[in-house]
Image (cartoon, rainbow, N blue to C red; front, side, top):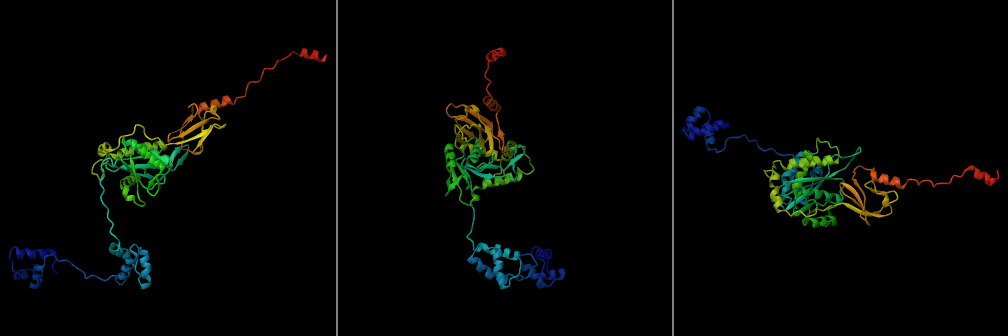
Length: 398
């Protein structure tokens, strides 16, 4: 057989230098017919083995019939159907063949590349860190990060919350949007329970939130996670690069480190953009809706009467109230940072406590303890006249 090097030499000698086939045969010892075949071939010689049959060949027609009836039929089920017909091969040979022929029976699925305009879209998601967050007093709690990414610049932000309730998620959204300094025109969410009210409609709390910010919303269809791929990729990047190898003193330290990490992530060179996200933020902000004069303040509020045991309970914790307001109605307010209460009739401050995310605690303000001690002190004993003993002697005739 003529190898590639000899084939190239024969063609060069004959076509370039004009050496005849007869002289080439003398030099190489090859037959003239072998040399003629080498000169006629425009492709280099290669060893080609005759294709051998496959153990799957007798069953390919049956596999095609099964895929025609059910294009998504799994390889496991197909092997089960082939076993009564005498098929005894392994999994790999069937899966390799299915990868080749299944696309002929499935409708083609392609994706359109999406280009975002500045200020147009902000995608949101809820990420649960793999470890519980320390909250002080030797306790930890399951936390969630409200995470977002701007479609055009890819700038991201995140806020730590401790529940999936609407009031906490909306607080996290407010914190993230304030980082941008302006409001994206459309907020994109999947069907998160606190955001979605069913049939693609927003919940009342989410709609009110968007109304306050004067922006629109979009609730994605079920299973359409690709429609918010920008934030999904950012979340995957955070899961791989933020949490591993870090430790947190408490929830405040977690948020501090998260903010610092986003500062670095937004300043990295983005592989898809081929620039830094922070460099495109100015164009994003310029096209956004102007920031409102007053940002939404999501929080919990309810009216109660100060009990004789002057405490208000929230999230298993008891916070002291001013005992001098016992029996009067107050409005309790709970935000992510503090617990307050105001008297409805006079506006007096009934309490102001830093919110604790640890559980089963009793938190008493020093001024409330002092006021309660004064109110519960025993009154002084009444003065009693002390008479001399001679007067009693005179009365009994002694």
